Structures are given as structure tokens and as C-alpha cells.
Image 1 (tube, one colour):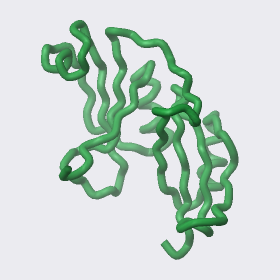
Image 2 (tube, helix red, strand yellow):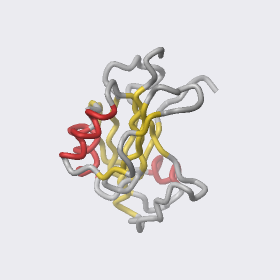
Image 3 (cartoon, one colour):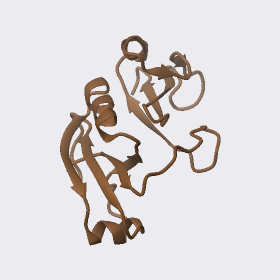
Length: 153
């Protein structure tokens, strides 16, 4: 392995998710495209696949081998039903985002209607002791995390 190209979430409504990640979380929209071609169908393993894709970057992060960090994918065809997003199920994942002030971000995002699992919790054990963290949900119930690193980091 030479690096991470991107991470990806499959979403129900690309426009809604782009608005959430760009407008509320501050990601930069790098590129959008529709994918209705043989390469994509072979890649995803669906012979009739049609996708809408958006690529986003975390501002201020150094660019590695790719121009983006997050890829959002809406399957136009085949459409999928939502799955159980419970965090405790095998295969569940989450994305942790660092912030300067978890309490301020929690307040800002809560006032915008973002659903939180908990308010920021002080991290009392481990390598991040002294920081704070909380889980919240995107529009498709994908778990995200705000992490305020400890002062020494």
C-alpha cells in the first residue's frame, strides 16, 4: 500500500449529502460527475449501474495521491434500501473529524438540526485523555465523530 486515495459513503440523495458535508461541515466540493459507463459497471459489479458521484476535500489538509478525501455515491441504478445503521453491527464504520472546540461545534451543528448521539464527552483515559469527543449522524444515519484533541497534541 502506498497511501489512501479516498473514503466513500453511499448516500440516498447526493444533493442533500453534498449540502450537509459542504455547507455544514465545511468540506470543499472538488468534483461532481454522473457515471453511466462500462468501466463503472464492471468496477461496482452491477451490469446496469448508474451512479452520481461527488468528491470532497477537507480544507487545509495536505493533498496526497488524490485531490479529494471523501467520495459520496448515489446509486441511481440499482437503487438500494437503507440498511440498519447501528454502530454496534459488524461492518459499521464512522469518520472522525478534528475540531478546535467540540462544545462550540456541537452547539452550532445542533442549532442547524444535526442529530447527535451525545453531547461532547471529556476523554478521561487513553492517549487522547484531556480531549473531548461525540458522535453525530449525517442525513443517511452514517455515524460521524467530532474529536477535540487534548491540549498537548
